Length: 73
Image (cartoon, rainbow, N blue to C red):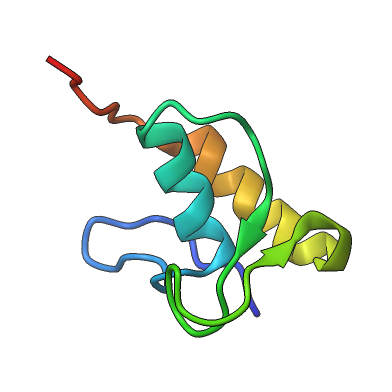
């Protein structure tokens, strides 16, 4: 899966490593590389132990570059 940088006109694939990293950062969750090949919470969750180095880098990119944070009120 190629790294798809976050752009204003294109979002990363839903459930992909970059999307999951971005979501984890947004919701204030710990750094925990994973992804869902069939989409978020659909099918098998791929854990870091089964991820390629490229997939881990995609997750890290999403986690490190998410600029928004959930306002829990």
